Length: 161
Image (cartoon, rainbow, N blue to C red; front, side):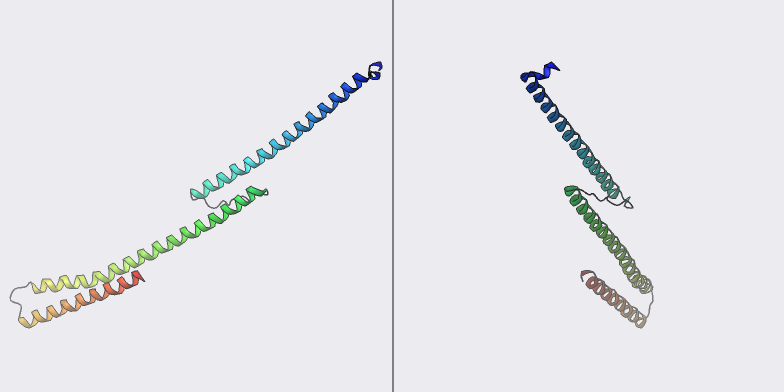
């Protein structure tokens, strides 16, 4: 203990103790930073996997909520975007179904007069058809064509409106 009586040794020892304490504090700060960064990157990786699941149609998963500042904002915005994308996809699906139903209805509505027109034309093509029947068949053709024009106008207006 005689060594500690020496002023230079005491100063050197105090200096080395201070440097050691400072290095320990820096080490702890680095460890805390690394743990925090690892947690943040893990949250980002989880968000990335959640987004990938949503993009591949496995939308039963929800984007995990984060507790940290920037990640919490990002997570919130991604959840909002996901909800909007799902709503848009649902709306497009409904519109496609309505369009398919409308096309089937139009097809059915046009097929009926077309069938009648074909039958009337085949009857008009018969030889020796009396003039009165020919006029009646032509009048029937005009009525069917008028019906088809009306259907075209109705469905044409419906489609644009």
